Image 1: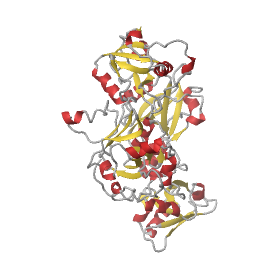
Image 2 (image 1 turned 135 degrees about the vertical axis):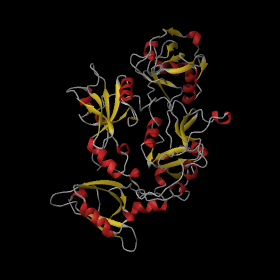
Image 3 (image 1 turned 45 degrees about the vertical axis):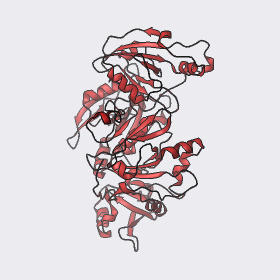
Image 4 (image 1 turned 90 degrees about the horizontal axis):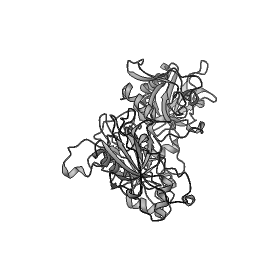
Length: 539
């Protein structure tokens, strides 16, 4: 999903269709292009080692008393889409699967309308922010492993107090460990430090055994590990002699995908491929880093340039990081590639588009960066680098997490502390050349669509809108019970003028608790803004 507008919680994963009256209502959740398209037939891919993964639907997983999640493995070819939407819906907990294309990849995998998403690529996501879940689906590449519960079963499990994380874990078995991507750097004396042997009686299977204290062991290879993948190629596709030649020809480093034999049995039982998208990649070098910046008095302290990389491809490069700047404090390094701005990939964006995205961030910014050598390595291995991103936010806790990837609906004070009835505000905006200057957000834990991010100097800021304000009405129409997608569609229909009745979160909760109506006749009108926004994309 281009997380570009960051105001839609819809993840679109379907082919484009003609908009007939019968389909318009069904497709209302596809807004602002804030979608990801993911569908169709399959071609055997030696790197993935599975010829028809979408037919996997593990009804025969480990059976436990209680909810029985289903595993759906989706595989799309180049230019295809997965064929489903992912939504947050008011009144329905969890991440909801919608609009599953019957004959698309999702439909053939066993995914059903109304399913709730528990795991993405074996990572538990039920308690994760919706935008981050969408991002993880986006960066997974052509193979996607989803663990889901049916709609009724999910809601019953929640009502009965089941620990859904444990439910998800149980279907893998007790002795499960994920596969490991191990990047091994050759030692001048010890070499790569491992040997490979065929498994007796099992064609196409090999064990890899590290030398004690050698480079392979330091990279995470363990004695008796099964070798699944070597430098981007499935080991099962080669004879033992060819694999040994590959190892001997290796110059400075080698990357292998390995798994212990017990965990391998878990994947075989579930008919699930052992692939890099599921791997623990802590030993990988040049991993992308997600950095959190808080704007200083003179900005962030770096320059962005569009340069031509080693392979001749244009890339966004970070340059001239100023000493003592927020960029330096966050860990930005001169000469790094800029892969994402606030969770949105920069690959298809122009230089001006990226600059605009940075300016839209206001006082906080998330940059995903990577060394140039990293791009070369992941390209050679055929892996999407964003799949292995390190989040460095925990190492710099004084920086508030930007709202681009995390829905913020803070309660600044307890509702009991309010002494007077709060006043809603009527904010009037005029659209500028590139928008009204704000993003919307929603949260499963709190009701109401709210103002999630405001561009500095834009129409929203000038109109008096504040971050975390709850949107009660749009141009006189109450939207408290509407989904965020429908609120966005309503705003898009209203042309160049926008009237928003809003109230701060503590005030909204107080009014609801005391059964007080929130109406425009009690609102204080904030000045109308007529200046165009030059920094923010329209919601």
